[in-house]
Length: 491
Image (cartoon, rainbow, N blue to C red; front, side, top):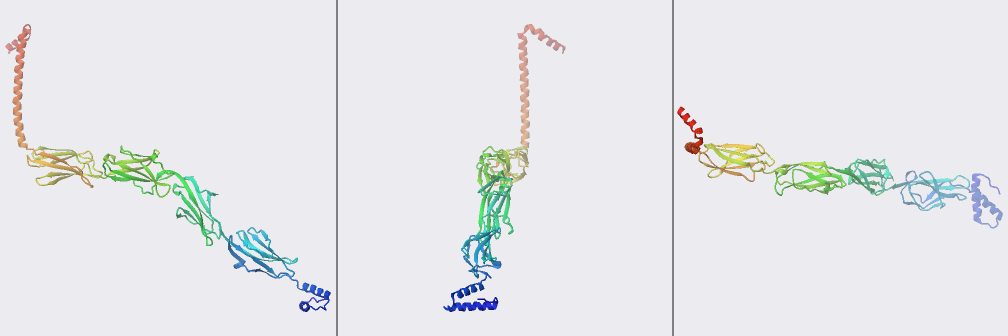
């Protein structure tokens, strides 16, 4: 049986064959039916026109499926109209362009995706013809944990220790799609951010003040943030923390239980040892330091107290660490002045009193002297005198006063703080110069008479002794007496 090779005839023949087959006429010879089946199968042979997926993937633009790493896709069936049936195959392509075939045939089971899978493909192969293919691509979202680098080397240690001024570069890398936002913290302070076009951020630590916890944090809209922390420990020698609070000049009173409390801010890592700290200054009393930590591990207080028992303890103090001068302070006096010293008062002329005294310690401020005089009812100020300086002598003359009067004086030292705790009192009798002159003349007269009488008696005694001596020495009388006689005769 021949069927014309014409599309219209071919279509009609297929319809006739279908009708004939449906009639199932037992009178049709078996050979004819076989020939009809062969011809119908030949006439209906066709390869795949299109490939479709069931269920259809939820794809976005450009056949792109967005999914997080670790999530699953599928299962999917790959369907194509083929006669005879097509050979259906699933495969996927990785990031390097390599192709990997799946063993399931037309059905792809559920797949766990990762960042290396870029696309899935269904291939329909029909007889010897080139297979037809349909695919869908994946946009796999992922974000890794932050990785810390020490001077460009991956380092997972919990603490990095370096010496001050040895450069230390802290770098943080966070891989992800999309590119994560990376933040680097020094303690609780965020350091300058990277841009969103980089997966890196870094910081260079060189000083003792850079000792801290450093935390690298990565985040994106697709994932919760994650972080990694390292302790940076930078060792350094002791030095004064100029950022303070730092005080170098102190003022104080003095007394048995008076002390100036010092708290010197220092930087050191590891902490300084109190036994290596010494203080030197104008004191014979021990100054014992202690060390306490401040808000961070490399900041400390050097605590001590300086006893100021008297004004000799004021002055310049030096702090040493391991015999090296680290810091100095000055303790100035801020006290009452010392009472005047060596106060003397006497009347030297009729109606006048002469007073002198010596300046003592001024208490740390400019001092002056107040001189009081008592009358019958009260005290009144008679002079306010400036200080010539410690150890200087002050002179004051008071008068004219009534001769014979008894005067009571009081002297005290004062400054802007207060006056001396103790004052000096002195009584003086005002001299009467006329009575003093008469008394002096009478005394001189009687003294002259006394001296004359004494001389006369001495002469008589000498003459008597000489006569006795001459009589007892007869043998020498001529030697001694004749010349005297001759001398007398001559006179």
